[in-house]
Length: 277
Ligand code: A2P
Image (tube, rainbow, N blue to C red; front, side, top):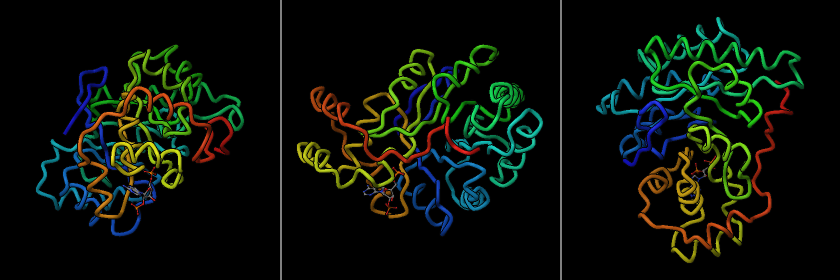
């Protein structure tokens, strides 16, 4: 399993198993993912599947120490005390005594919170406390745009190690991604396949045919070549397997350039500054 290092030296597998909207047959799907070799699972309190993922981790013979497990604090639990309490509840549901990575799921934004910056900073202080306690091996952000990350960096004692963003051909968030890279913050791609919205794109089909791979595989390799960690989701055993175990190949510089030049496509519609939470 290929890994990259976070700024604190922790190894993170570059392909993780995304679990958003995974609410049925969770144990079976996670068991399948572990069977084909995933050692990185991404969940969140709001996904409402932590208990079932915890059950799957109890029932597998894969050692907890070889699994990289991420969860996220939900928006209703922002702030110092609430975040500490939310973390403990996630641990309980996941039936583990530590997480590998804990993220702030979405920044508070100015549209809904006049004191958004203070809220985000207080939540980050709790993340630092958790990190220092040793209950989580790395801490980070999710859906934080450049200006939200800057707010955190202004006073952070411990810098975020990760920022998890929507990223796929047709939605590259270049400002935030390049800012994160410059600050040694690893970017994780959620919706790396555009949640299925890119799979029949004729331009991507044409490029993927040159490598004899599917559009899904092309999207994953594109993000990996950009230095990101990818979190594809699937409930289909064939796709679960192929999203991890595709044959190694390299997209040419010219094709990378063409993919980067695509106009916006596949955007989820979730913009951190305009969401109603
Ligand atoms: P399925 O569960 O039937 O595989 P994203 O990770 O970008 O959110 O995309 C998830 C969507 O993409 C799901 O609808 C999933 O459907 C589909 N998907 C995941 N992997 C593949 C693949 N290798 N080929 C085709 N579709 C895929």
